[in-house]
Length: 170
Image (cartoon, rainbow, N blue to C red):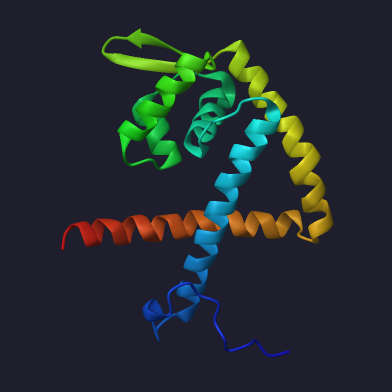
């Protein structure tokens, strides 16, 4: 079976003869990013927390991860958030809602999840199991394929970070 030569891209003017597949990947990243952000917001709404942004959902889950206190710089590093102001604003909103708490350690603020935040994360997990895992089971995707896609996305993240540094020096 031969692959179709038509590439599915969002910006044909960016398609490079060196790698049309890169434009396909970028279109896939755009679509997946928007769909994933929409999913996180709607899943959190179904879990009982309305009006949370995708950044807030990501931050809540990461602050809850392994139930350890985390510094803002570490949170931003792990989630690849360049603008700390975005994370700070989202964390303030989570503090106000009572999902995370902070404490001072010297000049640093350490963030951790509250009981209410942990309970919300578990409710999110229930909705995720009910909606997403059911859809996944019906999709025909295997766990091996998902693992390979995850590795590709992490590798692509590194490529784009390197290219962003290069572009910043121009």
